[in-house]
Image (tube, rainbow, N blue to C red; front, side):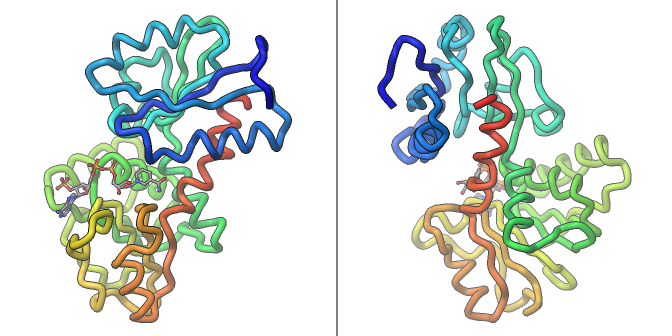
Length: 262
Ligand SMILES: NC(=O)c1ccc[n+]([C@@H]2O[C@H](COP(=O)([O-])OP(=O)(O)OC[C@H]3O[C@@H](n4cnc5c(N)ncnc54)[C@H](OP(=O)(O)O)[C@@H]3O)[C@@H](O)[C@H]2O)c1
């Protein structure tokens, strides 16, 4: 689409920026839907976000922003209104600029993960889940699994205190959530989810002893690069079904587009 005086702007805030996929994905969506809009990368470091924020609010042709590392939590504090998922997690990844300049935001990481499971035929309701990790993405996934009605949500994190705080926050929002904190013990798990960053870098240890995972369990990742992590490769070799990290982002795109009124 040619850029004209009527073209609406969208962008992604990130640091580093080169690896982000959102510009390709959203510009393809605009072309497919014949929408007069353009999606650009904004390379902005943490210490400059607050200074840039008033400019984004003032830009009358800005439709919205996607936020990724390291801006998800900071954007939640800068926005004028948060939808429940953003309030629960204290971080956002999708920000809509309202016509009056207010910024309304939410977090789709968790809903994207659950939608990705469902799109691949894995309904989480009633399942026993072992979730490895309790970082930003892990927290979003944990809240979404609790909301989806899992039968058991066991949290295991290197820093146990973080998993305990996450469990307490989940219970604040979902008092009946069957959430427990423990070791990375997959006995009786129907789904094992890796939300740690282990597997992104060559030479990382596996986040769990794969041979302890029941053969019938689904092993899910949220890491997208590499597409098949050593955990997924090892689980597949053991006969487990596997679920790739890309589904989480793929399923967020339509949710983000709706929220941004694209
Ligand atoms: N597919 C998607 O759409 C999507 C979206 C968002 C993120 N992600 C991916 O999710 C991963 C995590 O991102 P994040 O933003 O949640 O990061 P984060 O907030 O920094 O959390 C990292 C998590 O990994 C754990 N961890 C890191 N190094 C470890 C080690 N050596 N041993 C054991 N545990 C370790 C951390 O444990 P401690 O708490 O003990 O430090 C923490 O639980 C990244 O690979 C990211 O690319 C994917």
